[in-house]
Length: 124
Image (cartoon, one colour):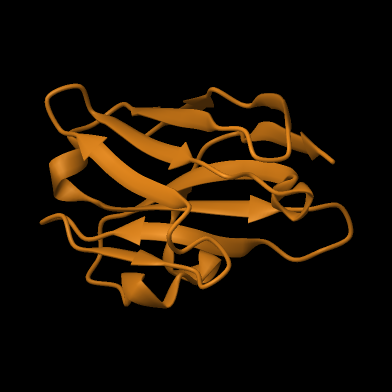
């Protein structure tokens, strides 16, 4: 069972930046990877995803502000978040899928393996 551990969350003011990291117990080059978030009382939503070969997809709400990347040598997935807004406040999860899923749809149901989440709070 692949394990994922997120870090890098915290509290920032609007306009600030954070970089989330997700260390994966297996070689990230073999997985479709994604970042998701869940705000209180809301459903989990896709933020960004990456194909095994590096293609990326972003939710419209974060396009141009967030960047997903990975370092296969370190088995680590990243999410650089710039120009943060209060509405970005949520628990952020990284996830992995090993099957041939439609990763670009950013649907949580397509990702089988999940981290425990890291809190991001953006104040106005």
